[in-house]
Length: 175
Image 1 (cartoon, helix red, strand yellow):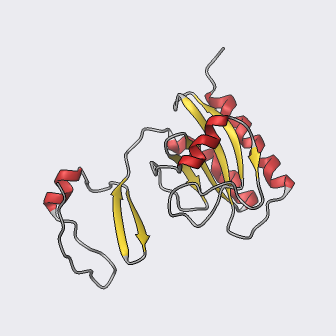
Image 2: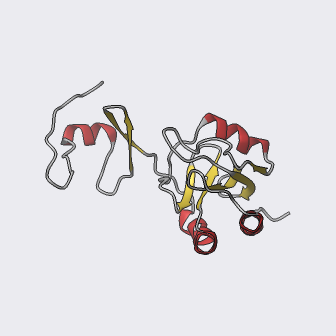
């Protein structure tokens, strides 16, 4: 069922989502919502909550971001698990192109960018480092997502590779 209503926006840019829509879609206080634009159309989508261990994953991204000042994300083959330095909400669905690159399970690098991490994103993933996450039980990757026009240095890629290895070491199942 599709519900359409007209709402006025207040001076701070807020709108009220009617109770019947919140109830039908399961939106509650604190729910993560993705807002995307397409020309004059604004789409609001509820992001699926995931128990990703994202606090621990963000703890890996924080010191790396402080040193390289480049957008970072950890993604499974389904969604963004954690990010820093670029707005990619937890649970945001990734592009099909990124999904296939992560499934290949190998390091990739391109100064011109491999692909956007999520639909409608102006940035592109410039480097991908595979990681093993027992908690995701699927393939995953640490992504470098620089601002458009920025070139990555070898040192930035090496630092990111080191963090990817640390993540794998922490989450890899005992053999």
